[in-house]
Length: 493
Image (cartoon, rainbow, N blue to C red; front, side, top):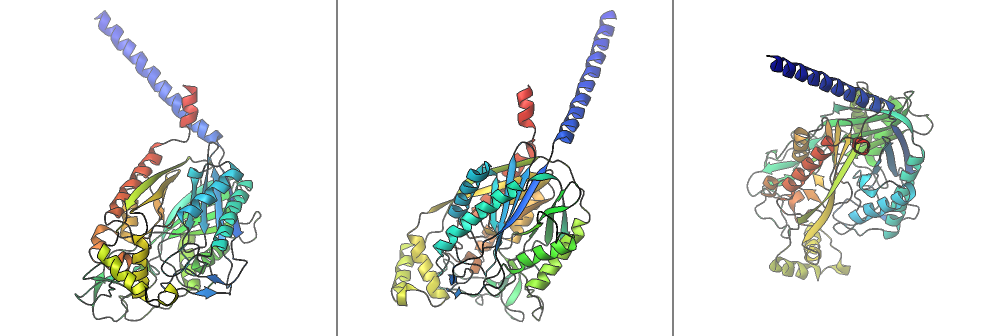
């Protein structure tokens, strides 16, 4: 009996000591977090070309302009949790190549000391900006591309110089008025095709028209979320706001930042940030919009919209969410990236031979229509490697998750990642850290259509999408399970 009582007494003492230790650990953790200071800095740097004319991205056939309708910017945000800094830069460009993103990060790292693997650089996908990467018949303006790279790096350095104590919060809004799936299942034999697409018997068509009797239904969902990440000084003065929406683009005469820049102006007005110093930086990133745009083809008539009306709608949705945000004086910042190698759908020898015969007849080697452009793409792809290496990223800001994809992913892909993410809420930034074309899910490849037609803008293996999704979910799990104070605790053990 005495021995049993001693054991019970010893066990009780041990339990009490353990409980005290746990409580002390929790208190210490809270104190540690309370003592930490979050800092933030932002800067928008002008990247408008200074030499004109320039080639414009975004079409099958080449076009040039000497007009500037509104300026282009790289909008840069640096966050610092006391242990590490991360960078998010959103660039007014159709696309940015992997090489350009890597060079930008190297230059920015030299200027700031921030490791390159803690930088996220994404294009907005405006179709009214200078070409910096070859696509279809448009070749890049190499001189402008070098200028753009240098300017983005300078913008990141300026944002770091603006670092000051900050608080941060996030929320999710909705706008279902300006994003619709643009791919439709068509009646057999009625979908648009081309002989150099790498597909046969297409059943899907992009933008089929409002009263097309051959369209059956949309091939997938659209992501209507409007994500909002708000950064303020400790006195509540706005520093930056990063939003995310999954419509492809709206349209504007070149050169223009399209609705992405108009959104930044409107959200600044709505939150009272027009005249703050240092200047407030609004940012709108492109979500998973590969199969989406502003056109509702289920309606019998084309709805009226332009970059100003769409920006107003999205900014209003963002502002509604903004008003619900709970702010934190400190949150952990965690970022992870992985290089993924994927195969390319290479053309057959027979396809290449037929394409070369078409290209040989082109005046000056330049295509005049879609068929000739895809013939040229077939020849070019045949001369390239059969694999591509690309960077995928996941970011944790408190309990918010962000993924970065170098593709034009579909709405269904983005919604799946959000649903399965350990971090919630979550949002996805397309066209990040390079560009490797459309990313159709395997079931969409079976339907064919423009976004699956083989070209440098749609070339990856049929099973690419599930491999990308699984990799991003693993990265989200990694950053969700990491704690920003791990290194400190490890050094204390």
